[in-house]
Image 1 (spheres, rainbow, N blue to C red):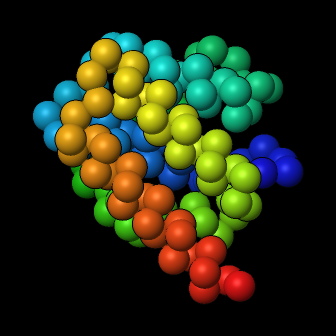
Image 2: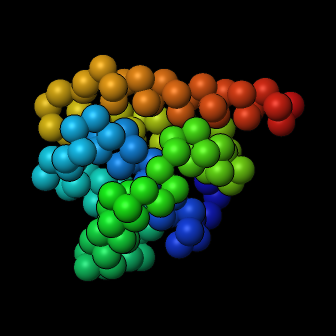
Length: 127
């Protein structure tokens, strides 16, 4: 990604992180939330700590409310603005978030594979 994401893109990226870690048990471990906050700060270093927490809280509220929670749809919408190297970086981030609580569940791994699959199809279609 050659530039910082827009607020909508950042919101969708956080929703994607949440789709990996929140989906199985409908709980967000504090270490997973901390990992997401750190990643958001890395994506948009100009945001302050309270601004980053607001982004994560807003996305979590939306996720819990069922807004934009389809993983395939989220991944496809992000594929439109993430170049291939950035997609790989996001996949690595998803792994970091999944490992943040010390365990990567089968469902978390399966969700990451689904995202990778959507992005692979998107990349093939663009060529």
